[in-house]
Image: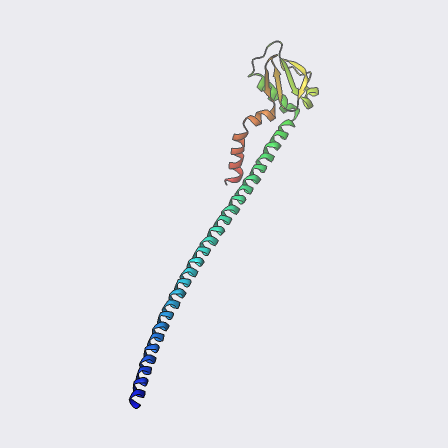
Length: 184
């Protein structure tokens, strides 16, 4: 029986050695598969991190650009308000010219207007009473304007109102005021 026991033991040892080899090879394959999956997961993790960082940077850049745009718009709005205030002040100051200065202005401007016998001079309401007896070479109307003056030619009104004159050159004034104030 010893031969039979030896053969059985030999078969068992060979089977055990083969089983150990299969297990060892399975463990190597398992380790390779696990390593490949870990590498793949790490690669995906790195890609996700890069994409997230890129998205965050893009979001930050867009947010900064939006705030810069809002800031510039706010500055431009503030500048426009300053320019508007200056133009309003100019209009107000012109409407408050001293009577003598106003009278001289009207006389100079009337020299450049072809006056007819039926034309009427419409004076600024707060200056009319003082100047109603002054000889401008034209009849003074009972009507008044808020600022400046007008000449009524019947069907044509020559407009020399300060506010309208300023409004007609507003764009140039805005540009000039902006250059003086903000481009130092």
